[in-house]
Length: 285
Image (cartoon, rainbow, N blue to C red):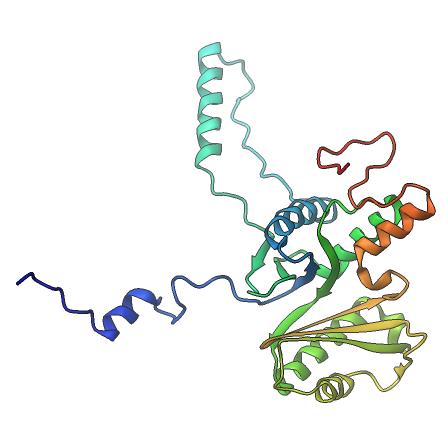
């Protein structure tokens, strides 16, 4: 009779499948921290992530340029021989190969939901400022640099989707907004709520929780709001961000912005259309 290995005990399997902090070793990155919610064409989530990485890195390099490490000067004020120069060059190349990779500023967090992406941002990247810069570029050029992305929703931070955590997050985000923009101490506002795959808290409960944190001098204006509190609830996660002129920017739908701008300029429909005189290897026909 052939030897049959007995099944491993559950405790042993747990030990092998879980890290010491309890996180499964096969788990994907959880939705957490500052980031950008992105809606995209169904079935095109993977290529959209790649395009967003390139786009966001380009914008972040412009807004938050990384300072290169300075190399120590060891010339000692005299000329080195050709052999020594070659050795130094080889040593520098080897050091650059062995150097640790530059930390990623953006990471795709798995949503396991069609058409919905979340790209987390690492400090010092500010998701709101990043998206506003991209919106400004699209409005000026009609170029989105993405083929399938629709709406971008920046959130300053995220939390577990329960009332106490949402209230705490709203207070922190509002305080940060007022610190950066103190002239908005008295303004007209509207809460822009989006709920996906969540049925624990009702829409009214979510709205009431955020409203309780808004400064008393702010007044609700559903038609002519100056400030918009973006609240994104997805499954068990809630994200909050605050922006201005949300409707004037077509709710940050870059596809609509590009199409409108290009139509007005007589350029037709083209999300990747490049302005005359420029070039882009990803241009669509």
